[in-house]
Length: 227
Length: 227
DNA sequence: CATCGTTCTAAACAATTGATTGAATCGGTC
DNA sequence: GACCGATTCAATCAATTGTTTAGAACGATG
Image: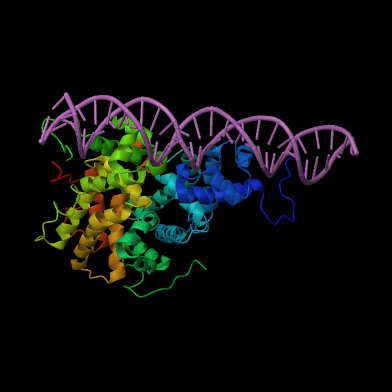
């Protein structure tokens, strides 16, 4: 039997170390840009370890992506923020705020980077990630939008969801180029709360649910979540 | 002297063939994933040609990206659609429609793919592309938004521009994963005009410039541009 | 024809890649 | 201690990588 993990194990298992290192290296350099030697060096594991524990480089990549998406799924706004009894409006706001927050400061940055990289150019691990993580999130948002007052037909529902997700994803997908355009300091001045407030207001106003019961105009700053 | 190009030259120069091939291969497989042999094979050029004409692989990549951005800059909404005398509202609508159109069906797909790949993970060629192409576009949009009725402060101006660009970029950056989620047929049902109409309406409504002089509610379809 | 610079070609370069081998080491069980 | 499966190790594999070399082919000029 495999030793699993003894209770007083300060350093993780070699297999876990390989997954940790693979997550970082693959996230930074991509699949082709990363070498198994580089990964094994960071993981402090012999080169043959990747073949012993995972078979080959490709399978190590797939397993790293799978674990990355499982780790990133925890702080996503599908479970923790969506109180099923609340009104669709507050559920939409919760969805946006949760998504902006997890994009702005993910619990595991390298896991998020790796997942976004795989989503930008879907490979062998994309199907699993979409099935277990992305699609439920997208359907969850669509169900929220479906219940909202301006009842839309299906294509409009789809595009409205895209408009919401696009605004949230932008600050992660296009942060490097945005920093090149406007300077890093201008981008770092945009906190998660500012971005979330803007996206919520922009989206709700676009849906015609704007200044009804929302905060008046500007200068609120009452950020409750994200302790 | 270099031969440049004789007038009755049916097949492009070897240097041009290398750039064409590099554009496609780099766009499809990325910098590390592409090999100079693969590029030279498609370009029907000897392996040493890349070293003779460009020095090394990296410089070939940079030149390919530069040319790709110059080609893609032609059908972008900064010059052809922005009539400087028009009102900022119609200029914003023109900006959005032009950007959505060039994202939906770019004149050179591989050039667009290569440019987006470089922007996703900025490398040696990102600075040039940003300076000569992306930043003017972003500043152009910001100037339009600055003149619009709801006069915003700088951070809000920035985020509003991001909301606009994010919606346009989404359909190019996240098309593969969107097809995985909802199926290719549902994505292909979204024509460029539908997307442009939605983004224009969504954005103008969000800015409080909604149903004033725009088309009434739905079912218009009067797409003028894009002959 | 001879000479020059430009361009292309075949061949090989050293280096790195992912993958594999067989032996050594470790931790239990008999 | 002997045995066993699990794990790790150093060493090496064939293949591919980007790069370079020397020489041939080309066209123009003298």
